[in-house]
Length: 231
Image (cartoon, rainbow, N blue to C red; front, top):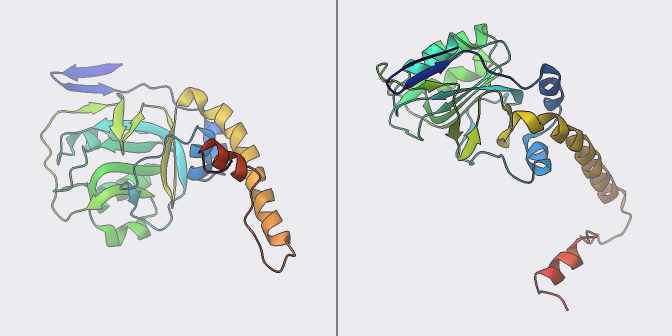
């Protein structure tokens, strides 16, 4: 069911990534998920953690707002389900915050898994105590307006990455990675293999008994030749 008027669209019913996939995704770093996804899906580094406890995973509830206006974020909060991630396209505007401690406390009570804002937030010193992972492009003490139309649960761009409602969102200290809902289960199978591969590499580094350790990955010479740097 959707409600629309002029440029406003509110979609209440979306298909979310499966709960068991979300549970599995919590075991993997955002970098691992981005690597097995073809080294793509990671949001721009300007979308950074504003809270110290940052790891989360969940399906996206997308919000498209006018710069500096948070009316549709309030409407989206009335629609979220436990475990959802609010992903907000604020157009990168940093002149005023779109969300602060009152709304984030409410998100905690709603059991929102995380909040990602391509825009500004405020009350940063209070966020750590609330316990909801918050990622944003910056902070600003100015408050938002609450008067402009927008869209909920339509495709958006956040941090330079396309996000559709229901897609898998994974975040940690490195940033936020987006995985298409349909591809999430198969990518997480690859993530398990990637974690084991990296574990073995690190173990081999520490197992070396050479007095002078040399970095010589098996792929390096081939890559240098392909780049025209070795005969």
